[in-house]
Length: 345
Image (cartoon, rainbow, N blue to C red):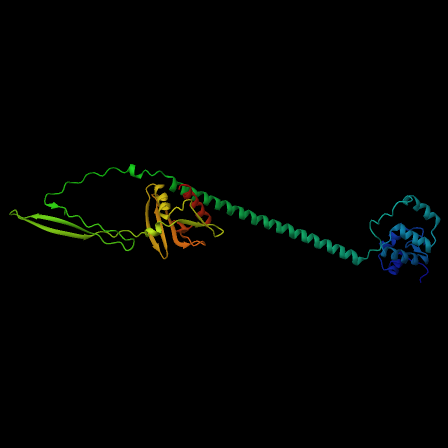
């Protein structure tokens, strides 16, 4: 072993930094004897063994006071250094205080510590970025919901105008003016047409008949019979279909009807009676019957009805879909429309 040591020599011997050796001197000045105080400072040969013992004690997790006791058992402490250290010693019976910054920490440990701290800072930065993106997505969702609520409010107002108008169309229509009296030569055939019971499908073709009397120049009268086909009756569902209770399906797939088992005919009657100046007709689309209503403002509402059976085996008519101006509405909008009509039943 060398006769004397410098800070650098002791650091190389213990495998620590020069700063760590200097901290050993500050904590245990009486155990590391100084030989010369010139530059560089040189220490006595026993200083190497003292520094090695301090390093081992700190590596075992011992505190400064515990390490001081170990050094007193193996090495001699200078009296002057003992007196300088006494004021800083803790009172008797006080517990050992932990070292604020443990000596003997290697460069590898510090490097790992700062690497871990850097990774934590990067993780926090990534978390902040993700939070900012989440807030942007949330703002977009809120904007979309506001637009959806505006459209929903507009549709509700449209249905309110359609359903809540007073049925005063008949009072506003003027009485028809009497037409001109027929000429004596034209007489309607007094024979009544035989009454027939119309079938739902197909509708019978009714033939209109008229007797025309033509008077000649010499006073003779000739009779002619004119016949023409009347316009075919509009297509409509059967009476059995119209008299079947109407239901709707909720989000859980359950069938919801109207108290009293309101039939389809009653449901349609509420729509027509609550509307003003509306044109309505039936149309067939596959297995569904479509009731089409056209308002004076040009808006059209097409309600699609299909025949189905409930889980209990009851035959019902299902309001399957509602199209406004050719575009289908949402299931929630259809349920709200059904509820408003049901409240008028």
